[in-house]
Length: 509
Image 1 (cartoon, rainbow, N blue to C red):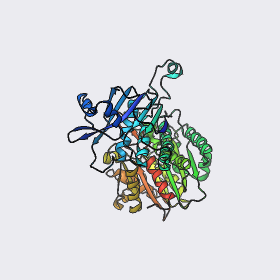
Image 2 (cartoon, helix red, strand yellow):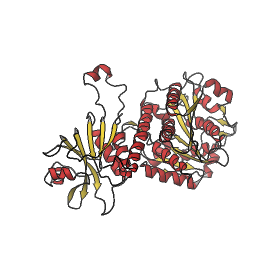
Image 3 (cartoon, rainbow, N blue to C red):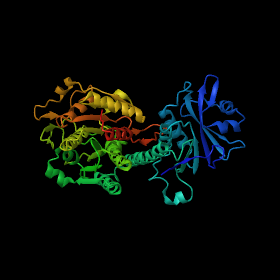
Image 4 (tube, helix red, strand yellow):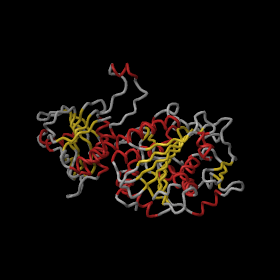
């Protein structure tokens, strides 16, 4: 993991392998951002002009490396674009700093130590820069290079080893707390990313449950794992129905973090399909290769619960990981089969590739039995949500408008793109079944909303509930940008932790 320290050293004096500073677009050209005064002075006040000569534009996330002039201890200066210069008196937005730090950290892979001298005015800036740098420094290299090649210096470059954050105050309680929160949060997001990126032959439901059990022991979280026998005894027809086609049986994992002074209880439910072939309703060619990511919701829930424990939040947070592998075989659930769910309701399975809602339904019912103040489920649930909102924005549905708004606002605060979505009552009729209580498919148009309406059926009466469909942002297939890597992203973890912090204050919105 990349180390983070708060340093009181000046930008010119700190010994590091690289010095990161910000550059912004002014009305008359590029302007050195606060924190880069020593660098501008070393360039005789012409730092912006030099960067312009090199072709820099100051656009957000743009990175320009240049050798340091006399007067700086670091041999390399890395200028990262911050976009337009803020209006007088305004600070740089947190997400701008977060992405800039992430872009710089990615550009410095293979480097041992970098000093980040980006604009810092408040603890929020410390948090944003620390989060961006630590998330941007992430790399999944577990299956690359090998030990022998690593010793020879061959194979993929290692992430930036150490970040020294300048401008922060190590003795300031708020700055120190912001840095400590960033470290705990990003370590768990990066662990979620590792889980998402792990190949499905290694991350089976049983293996995921083992990871959760070990993390629980490490962080004082009570963990309960229901194996296939316990699931059968308990009547978890959704989990068993989805997992029955695989040689790797399903699991339901409960992680319970409790605080003695907690006033609120939050339940988080995650879809954990460790590999999704579509089952008998097999996915077409070209759609299977990334289906290891279909457990991203469970990874996010796992990371959020562990983060809450590490941060010592004054709230009870219970995570439910609904883990299964969806495979075609002679024992797999067929289109037309009827499953009896944990709730007692029967579901006609019209499409075995609409499996996420089946495992979530069982977990939602089980979570409802404990009467939490609110339930949030997280899932890479529908391609329809990607068609509606693209690859970077997750949808939020809820049975309470105020709660949906709260989640949207918390996501914005955390730097995660989201959008409130409706649950139109008229779409419910499309899931009527002549055979069972409900079908797992409805109208094709508005498919993401149909899935949300299905899940709503399994939430306990009177319980506030929201559904996050993270199908778009959970797994990034394009080139890395900002602090977002290629592959698993850890989408929604920051939003869930913000919600837990809000609940810890006694308010759920």
